[in-house]
Length: 108
Image (cartoon, rainbow, N blue to C red; front, side):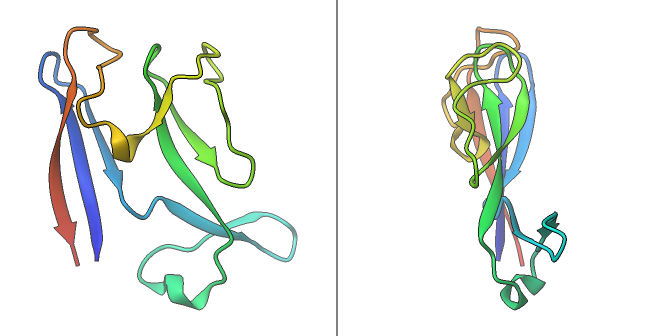
C-alpha cells in the first residue's frame, strides 16, 4: 500500500506531493537506471533509490541518488536539503514566512 503526503505552506500555498516509496531502481544490462514501480517491485532486485529532496534556502526540488548521495544543493550549494517526506513544520523557501503541514493519503 502506497502512502502519499501533500505538504502545503499555510502562508503562501506552495504544495509538494511526495510518496513513501520514492523511486527504487536497479541497473540494466547496459548499466542504465531501470526504475521498478509498485506493484511489480517484488520481481526486481532493487539496489538503489532516488529520493525527492527540497533545498530549504532556495526552493530547488532535486532527486538524491542513494548510490552517490548529494550533500549540497546544485543551485545554491547549501547543505540544507531535506527529504520531501520529512517536510512537516519545515520553513517554506518561497515565502520565508510560513511552514509546511502535511495531509496524508493512502492508495492501495
